[in-house]
Every structure is written in C-alpha cells, then in structure tokens.
Image 1 (cartoon, rainbow, N blue to C red):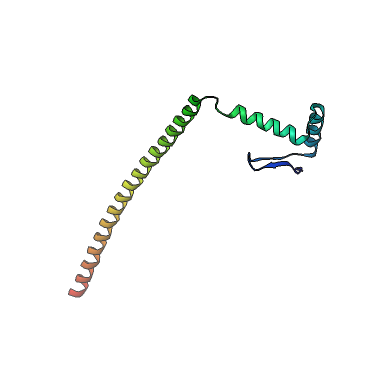
Image 2 (tube, rainbow, N blue to C red):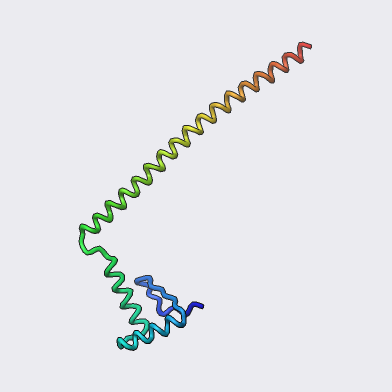
Length: 117
C-alpha cells in the first residue's frame, strides 16, 4: 500500500510516494540528522540532480553530438525502410495492373466468342 506523497514540487517535478515502513525509516533518518522527511528527500533529490548534471560545456557538447548521431542514424534507417516499402509498392502495383489487363482481355475474348456463336 503506497503512502501519500511527501511533497510535490512543481519546479523540479519531484513526486515521491512511499510505503508506511519507508516513511517511518525516512522519519528516523531525518530525525537523526535534524531534518524533516521532506527536507531529507529534498536534499537527496538536489544531490541526485547535481550529480546527473553535466559539469562542463564539453560534456553537454558530447551529449548533443550523441543525440544528433542517434537521431540521424534513426532517420537514415527509417528512410531506407520507407524507400524499400515504396519500391515494393510499385512492384505490386505493376504486377496487379498486368494481371487486371490480362483478365480484361480474357473477358473481352469470351464476350466476342459468345457473341459469334
């Protein structure tokens, strides 16, 4: 059974739901550190955000380049797939048109044959 959210922070998007047991544990840890449960969670969240943020512009550029490469690889692969599907579509269309023309000719031949009899 999940407990109630300790705190919703619209700025950071923090939304934490905990069990009653976890809530008691947080309360004990917070009390030993002289903090409330919410302050403890806020501190942990702030530390987590700090550690996940790039430290230098170089790291941001690395992430940007990786994102660009990933996107271009995806778009390239999808483009090739679509080109293949388009070629298959044209082949199928041509095959069906030929078959339809052949059947039309057979029907016309049968009509002529039956009208001559």
